[in-house]
Length: 365
Image (cartoon, rainbow, N blue to C red; front, side, top):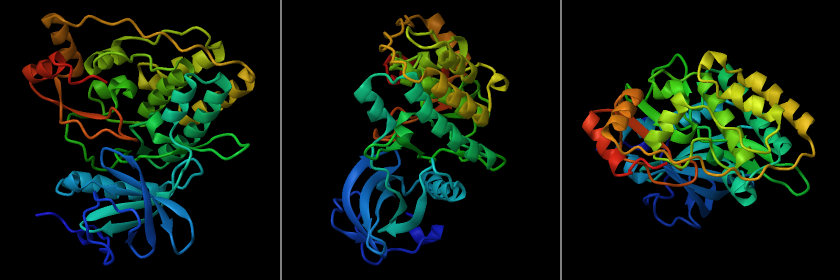
């Protein structure tokens, strides 16, 4: 039986009772929100631009997908995201305003950030000058300082989850979003025991080896992201996800041409294999500020060529990957969309199952 929104402490909307996956343009939900247009689709929900008629503000409303309403963990994560965002009040973190019911579903009302994602920004430019890249990630690091001080680990840091508030004649202002799989330290986890959740291109090696998430996993992802902004791709991209996981554990990133020393040292520090060797988010923010000052005026590097393709065709290599990744096997992939591109949840299962998914290329990431 599908749970009603009231069971999660959210009063149902009397104004609108249709399924949230319908075309809701022009409809009023809650007490004052007029839906204008759908602006995104993610793994857990759709995002709508809406007008708050009480204040005149434009807002974003993220609605939980109808098919996830029967999944208690998905609903709990959705509600937990609101609780986390209410706890995190920072200029570089998207602010949550309200939670409401839309028919049988839930909606999360947040500030609207209208400049697109860092993914689109990078796609338009190919690579960024080191000072520009460091300035953007300095803002992200400051957001992570706030989160980590409050015991929150984001766990899915990537360009899709970094929004840009771009105003005329002003530098882009970063807003970190999508805390849907964030982990609150010292609290019960929502992930299945021995499950690996996140986006393969940004996963820290200790997560792949089964360790619990700590703030160091966000710092690792920040280093991968810095590499991506400078080089135009992540260091281990262009391979099946199982090979990407292996590279995170056993490889070090190659230095592309055109990246200045001061920026490269930040990449290496953040992507250290041992989490104890990585700097804190606060130290990373300081390092990024130094990169901004020391590389001002330097041009962007040319896009790095793709990394060499690994031949992973033998049973011996497949077995080595299985041993490395702890015999992980993928759960059904979520729907693609902004904020969820490439996210996968992997569970420890049989060697045969993992090999089957790997063989047929179903883990490409």
